Structures are given as structure tokens and as C-alpha cells.
Image (tube, rainbow, N blue to C red; front, side, top):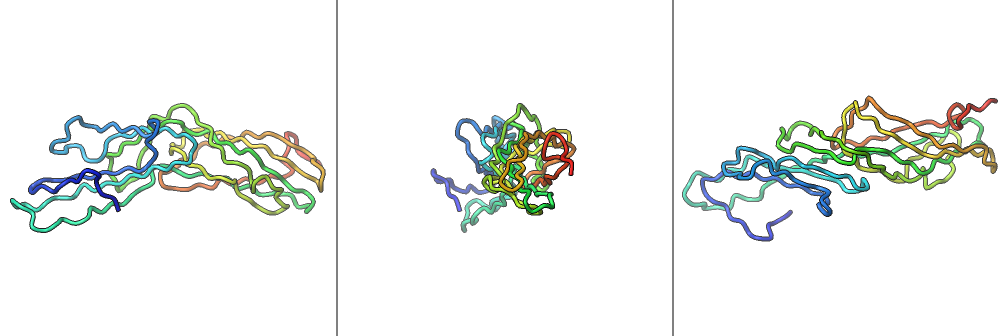
Length: 233
């Protein structure tokens, strides 16, 4: 529940449009173009166009609107219209990574560390669009590196086992034409011996991210890809 700091009052014979946004507005992370200098008559429904700058992928952005509140067609209100109900929607997408140790030998353990993902730094979303449909992000600019930590806090993953990145992060959704770049370090242990280590760069493309959805990207580390060269039995 939320109330105005400065109390507002219903006025008969007026239409009211409500919009709400939740997120970190410090340092201009969220900037609103109100879409109309004078909203008398509210020819433009919704809040306008939002420009969002992703800082660390830890701050979510939620949006809600209710554009159907109409006061009774009378000269005076006899009863309080009641609370305005909102349904909030997530405007960002959440990503994380899960790695599987694809080796069969139980003495082969794998460590995955320092997972980073290049994502859009800035994007715009039209909040006046049909609220019942998915929000469309445009104007993707620059790149931002999101830190997803290690897998299982840097512990060794046993053969045949899977573990996820320490962190999940929030990103501006983009269409299938956007190319995400993922980097991480991988180590292969044979018993207590560090057998190989490599820095990996993987490009993800042809996949659309949708607002309000979470994505878990999965990869298997095995003898074919653990090192820069394949391992020979």
C-alpha cells in the first residue's frame, strides 16, 4: 500500500489515470519523458517513455498503470471511491548460468570462475503501449559488463554434477539480433593436480529476451572444450 505525501482529493466528473514505477532513480538511472507537457484531457495514457541505465544488474524496474478510474457523474462524491488497484510488471529480464561437469572420470573436477556478461547499458521502453502486451525495448546503446561471480563460489564441480553462478543479474531485454558476449575462466583438475586452465569467450545471439522472464543459460564442460585444444584419451 502507498499514499501521497501531499494528500490529493477526488474531483467529480473527472477521469483519472494512474501510473507507477518502482526502481532506483538515483543518479538518473531512470529518466522519464512524460510524453506531453500538458496532460489536460490525458490524450496520452500511461507514463511516457522511460530511459533506463543499467548500473550493476541488481536493481529491478517495475511498472504499473490503471487508466480506467472514473469518478461518478455527479456534482459531489458521497462515498470514497476506494483504493486504486495496480498490477506491477517487471520490465527487465533476469539471467544466470549453470555449468555441468561432463567428464566421466570421478577424479576430473571442474572450476568455473569470474563469469561476466556483456549486455546493453542503456535502453528505452514506451510505457504508453498496450499494458496487456509485452513491453518493447529500443535504443540499445553501449555495453555493460555484469558480474555473475563464480560457480558454487569457486568450488570444484564433481564429474556428472551441475552448479549455478553465484549471482543472477538483471538486464535490459533485447531482440534476437542482439549479440551477448559471455566470458569466464575454467580450470580442470585431475585429482589434486591442476591439469589445464583457459579463458573462454562465448557469443549468444539469435535469442530474444522478454521482460519479466528469467533465463538460465546452461553449458557442459568436457574434454572437447575445457582447454583451447581438445584432450586426447
